[in-house]
Image (cartoon, rainbow, N blue to C red; front, side, top):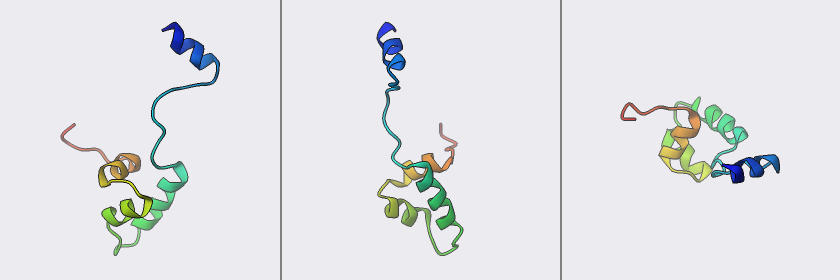
Length: 64
């Protein structure tokens, strides 16, 4: 725990960086307003999996 506190004091958080930035999530939401665009196509456009896109977009799975 002391190591984590020291890292935080230096401005480090740890963990993996998000695959999609907040700007990417906003762009993806705008793309989804087009009825011809599928979620899979949007995910491919941003170079992430469908599952990663859903997690970034705030979708929740009933299985979790």
